[in-house]
Length: 321
Image (cartoon, rainbow, N blue to C red; front, side, top):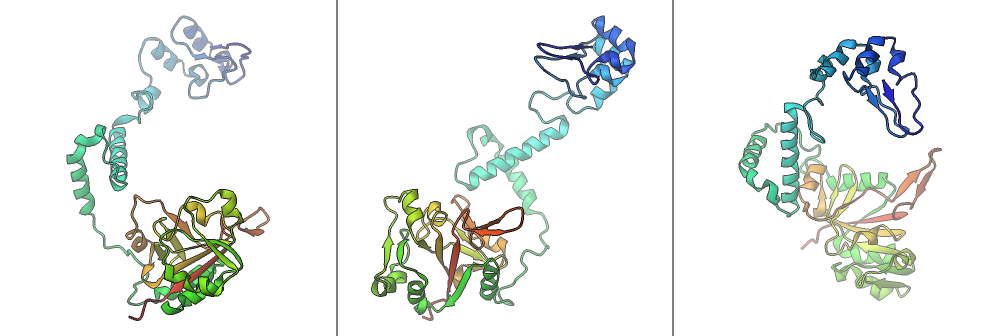
């Protein structure tokens, strides 16, 4: 039986009488069960309209307070609101709590008062995790057998970044040559010797700090930004910033149209696992793989939509000393 609120009209998929089984309607009418109740404009779904099932026994059992075979098979029959059903829900919920606890611990926020009593379970889970066999391949490029610096340069160039390898003593000159005329933002903590030749040889370049933070309009008007990085990944040609000293806040590397980033040899990790092991999970991280680029439905590539249009990478060799 279908009862509708304001404006409700019984349709062919909601009218119990249209199921071809009159006994369903009769039994529902005697108070056996309320088949479907609709509010204003409400339409019951197929999993809620018992009258449309064509199975009178389900209606009889519902009317006597019994559960039908479908109720017993349904995992929602014995679960409360918002609960994950069945016995498996307990383990899934426990796993969820463990994951969240570990995330909080990794980010320095603690386990939380509601979960502080689960340290024994946490230790057991850690022991079980530690006992897992790890004889799988964790890296594709052994630095002893591969030139990971050359690999990084190749992969970064594949993303249409401008890539140059320079000697340590040639870095200040390479930075000065890479800049066009205009204002370039320099975050706090960038080594001053990197910029020595810019100050000496490039009168047309103005180096601006970000303290106090520049406005979005000022960043947009800047010719570019100069930063270092935290780590780079040879396998993917990716540069990772954690916005520490010499890297600045995230807006500095997203708003200006040009980003000059200096990557030192020792900052290049062979693969993603090696790079992640060098990062502090409590810090914000930005992963950069080439200049910002997108394409429309016709596959027309457009650069500079969501970040710098030009990414210039200087790979600095270690100091010979």
